[in-house]
Length: 444
Image (tube, rainbow, N blue to C red; front, side, top):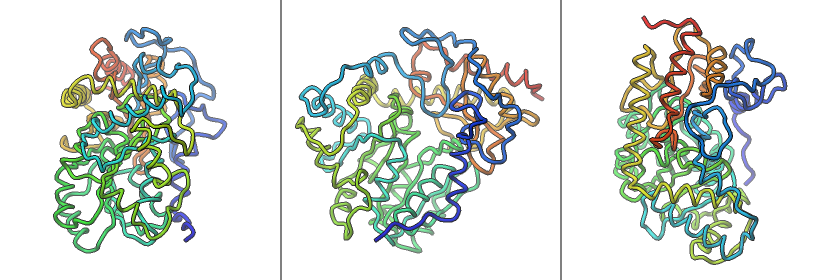
């Protein structure tokens, strides 16, 4: 069956992504407001990138001085992880690399907290968005129903992707800055049989954290055949995910956020039940590179330390991921999650002390790896972000179409949040306070 055309709203959503590619705007600089919507005031954006900045006082042992990257991914990377990227060139089917890849897949099981041999990890070259394609092309057949819990820009994107592959999508959307509540979800699940339900654990556009444990229990009780799929791009390695204990069926993520590895790897874990759904499809997966049927034997062979080939992986990125996972698992995961929460609490207290509000107003729905901050009246992101950049701090602009010009985003994941030798967070808070003052803001 041919893929269905995307819905009419799709081009408008894509415009949020493509607008920053216009040649009159600086590309990938601290001055851009990420994925500029049509409504943003760009009159104050410089036409070329300034190279001057005040470096963060954090000591970088081997990295050249640079503004501290505190967006919700990519994040700052540990020196050892970056050094792993300089590994000499080697065969992707050679014994050394196969052993490294196999160990990496095994460590992912520990990170996701699964000991089920039927669960299957995947590490593919690509961004976190590729995880959406894995789900849509392999777990869902054309015409099957999927319930998407809407919390912002990225849950909207997951819904768009599912429609491209022919899924019949129902979106249960919440007001900006919150999430669908369990009674609403139970009602929706009771009205129709869904092949899967998707939830964005942390929607990077709003900083909203969706609770997984009670949601999963509800789905298993009300609609036990429904697969539970989690977009964990901005949550894996900074928010707890107990894959087996919570009965999850799929978690898709990426390398460049809390895992702390450079961008370029799509990372996912699927349950034995999900893998059976792939095996029992009535139609072939509507993808080639994203076909789990093609990749499953490759991943299984690598984990068994056997050379295998379908498409060439990136040995350097796999080495970096291996280093990042080794660092993560050198300490209890509970300590890592607690450390991110402590840093998050510190940031959010500082935001409140400045008289600012968060997009996610309910403390129980606030992510621990990032904070979305409403700008005070009279302060524009196009004014504030360049000031922060000159102080050596890079924040992200807003991307939620309803509030894009009204807020900024502060990422606090990985080494910036956890390494006691770094002063990234303190420096960023001080820069934000000074930057707001330079924009004319005074706390009432």
